[in-house]
Image (cartoon, rainbow, N blue to C red; front, top):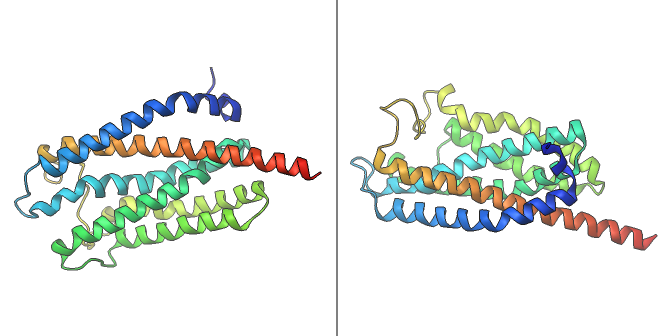
Length: 241
């Protein structure tokens, strides 16, 4: 059985309709569990105090802000190569979710940064790359809205997505490229000196998994909506003729 069969809108709608209830319940349960565990049942950090607990929102949101763009890139490449409309609509559906994750990451990072750095914002390499990525997200959505021909819009947004992927990668690896940045290293690392303590690790992993499942759930919901809108537009166009 090939995965490409789900590029068919009918089969995609059938499969997504079956898995969405389970994904919704699972993501909600994990998100509630992870956040309650993280915010109420973990100790304060010896250096950062209670402010460290914002890690349970900031890290998953930052990861999904980057990975949402990566997912859009993969879907865009599938569209350019194989011309599957579901992949183009999935990329379009993911963009507002990616913007939301990016805004959460920037906002929580600012709140976390104030007591640590003494300022809400600094033109740190990773923060700058994140801000540029946010601009690309808005540009991506604006480009979809500005072009009436959906296939042309999919083509141009796919190209924009490939360009923006540079900044998605910079957002992830800027700390490794520029050692002079204020931003700390990765919270999840093979290096024991950088790796987050076990007291924070397990609830953080639950939150990360919850954000991943939440992202998948929202993308499926929004893609289903985009398919319905595409069908409605086609019916209206036929009626006008």
